Length: 254
Image (tube, rainbow, N blue to C red):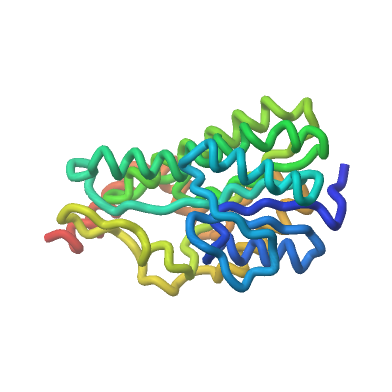
């Protein structure tokens, strides 16, 4: 069943970057958009709420507020997330906990609260993942772990709700020209394997791909050729890929 043009869409992590661009893309397409984030959202033509996805009570309250305002929920876009760059040895329990609470528990909390409403509309869950959901780099292992977990969550959820008519879509961007890397937390002495901020796909291009996947009901979309190639190489040529990554890492960390 096709979703109506004036569908109600909730986007998490919508204060900037991919989340904000996605909210704007759905709004231009005729959707009624709700946007939430930990910080205030300004200048966005949407129903804006403050919500920390790490807190299940706040997530449930936000979804209840959206349904109370619009009368329904058709699409949940789980976009909120962040990264931590550090070695495994120097990773703190607090950083690992925060990563999983934001990048994994947040989407789980949102889905649990949204499913009763999505069943009524035969709606969708869109999980914004990463090319690192299928590959791993040194010194960002915690982040990679969360995206691997989000991929497993997406696959399992799709099987569980298929009979209810709810679609589950996973979109995996690669390098994107946002402040994600600049905002990522860095701890310890190791230098991570990251590209300069400002490189990669624009958030608007990623948002268009998310909108397109939602409209088509695509199961999985992995956006960049280099991300797909990296995942293929790590799966099929693991020794060579790991050798290359560690050679790069040793240049950064002599």
